[in-house]
Image (tube, rainbow, N blue to C red; front, top):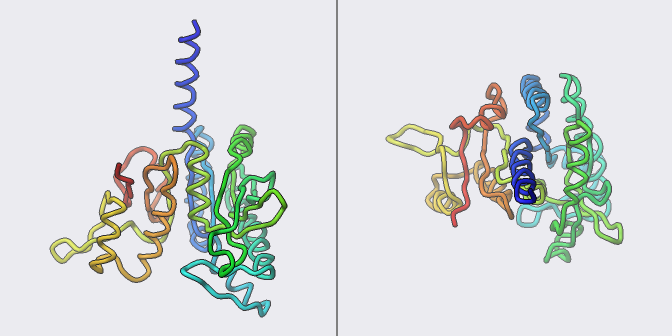
Length: 279
């Protein structure tokens, strides 16, 4: 009898994982997506597949810092975060962008609840190793997965802004890709979907640009070295690689403007580019 119950519990856990997925998207990309994208999210939710959204918002942060006359600079691709910058980061990420996404989902009949990593200590963080140089930027130490699961069980789609907190209450600016990978890993999700404005990683084959259906992290690094991945695509693929963390074994890069893109990926259609972590 006990073994039967154990098998049932294992089966339930496996189904739960299939029913939940983590989607990462930049705030500016999400704002530009068609209404049909949010309708797809709503339909997935109503069918029992639970999206968990982690978003960024770099351009909007830069725009608001400029309006307020606050200097900003980047160190190795990460925003140097002083206390005044941190105030704006939290205001934009946990405030305007987070609520804009919630509104877009609710406008099409979905149910969404906005959170930041500060709420309930959702995303616990510590200073990055070079914090003396870069300020209040954090690495994720843990994610309170039960908060996300509780929100989902109440029938809401969690929309998470990547601001973290430590035991003393200090806030941290968390890279959205790092936060998304940590959320997915702590939820036990093996696959993440990264929504962008490109169809995937492209490669020239006989003079024609084609989307690579699958590529390993090492192959991406090789393509950057050879110049096959260049310009604005480099930060996109590096961001996707940053999501491969812990239990997350693959990340799928897709173009959010494609019709029903999330449903098609989850149904197993070969679309976009799968980045896989090799053993």
